[in-house]
Length: 104
Image 1 (tube, helix red, strand yellow):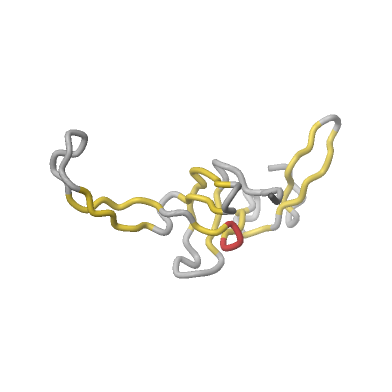
Image 2 (cartoon, rainbow, N blue to C red):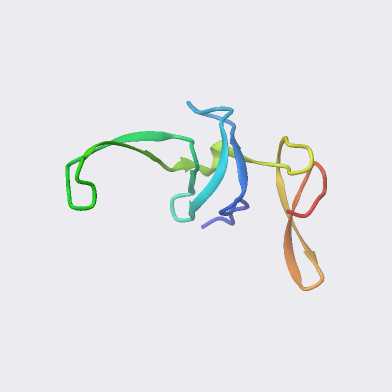
């Protein structure tokens, strides 16, 4: 398993694929499959039968996972995509933006 530098709550932009250019907040990260679920990106339609939880049934839109390699973190200072580095400050490891050298 590789070390992922994108975490839940990060704001990311899709850099490849059908949804290229879309931005959203990372809702969850699956480390085993190297995929993330990004809010409002890669929406799929799921047909549901009526049930007690959803008495109407019908078509539900929901986010599908997207490959980690297809998303890039947005630098909070420059609002552009950036690579992420890790360095040790004191006793802690911190993530930082390679463009602005700002701690994330």
